[in-house]
Amino acid sequence: RQKRFTPADITALKGVRPIVSLTAYTTPVARILDRHCDLLLVGDSLGMVLYGMETTVGVTMDMMVAHGQATMRGATRACVIVDLPFGSYQESKEQAFRNAVRLMKETGCDGVKLEGGAEMAETVEFLVSRGVPVFGHIGLMPQQVNTSGGYRSKGHSEDEQDKIRRDAKAIDDAGAFAMVIEGTVEPLAREITTTVKAATIGIGASPACDGQILVSDDMLGLFNEFKPRFVKHYSELADVIDKAAEGYAAEVKERIFPGPEHTFQIRPKK
Ligand code: KIV
Ligand code: NA
Image 1 (tube, helix red, strand yellow):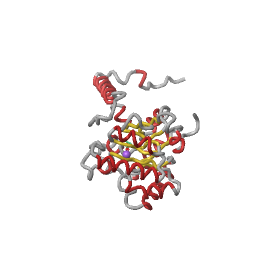
Image 2 (cartoon, protein in one colour):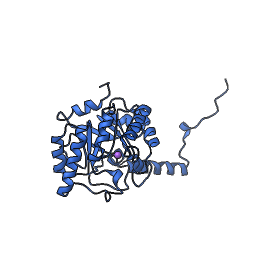
Image 3 (cartoon, helix red, strand yellow):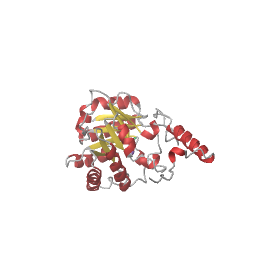
Image 4 (cartoon, helix red, strand yellow):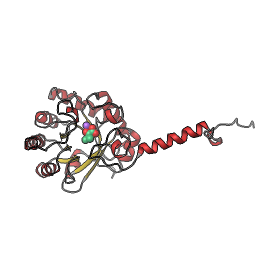
């Protein structure tokens, strides 16, 4: 496939086949993941997995622009969505539009993602009706970690289930082309998937969601500070890097590296 997936193409996959998505932040990794994914998300998770921040709260617009640009240089067929970071959209729908447009203009991405349910519905509608494709994000919302009592899974009480159900409907009615459902009890994520028009992309949600997403550094076994229940390692990249650095260090100390093939001799005169 030559043409990139559009947000509308992603929605159209609902009910056809599962949507494959991962996060991407850099050109070389995006180039690889692009071969296998329908959608690449430049997630604000980059604050934690690339920059060592404790939460995503400190991530800035400049960081999202830089990594959005890097990802776009590597992706040719996947739909690329960039996260609006904490504080860049909650103040007003106008602020959200201004920052969403900055991400789209400066990176060339296909749309933006923002966290929130009913309280963000007006903003989602404002953006979508003015030409900005919006990927929603409900259930566990990492940008609200400081007011929601940490990284707890959601939907264990009926009150919480009702709230998430209303959140899903609100951003669906507002026109989101897809929504992430994160850390939410399985039966509820399954139910929401059957009731909304948007494609649901699960992370710690349900195999019945219209698609799945994981943080690439988690999936690759590179970010190992902690491992949520919903993460599966498809590789142990941290071990691969550790072994490589160990081998390099040993060869430098024993003067094995660099070898003759890595060094320059003076060229003989003609
Ligand atoms: O920032 C991120 O990587 C995300 C995904 C986990 C959905 O929002
Ligand atoms: Na995010």
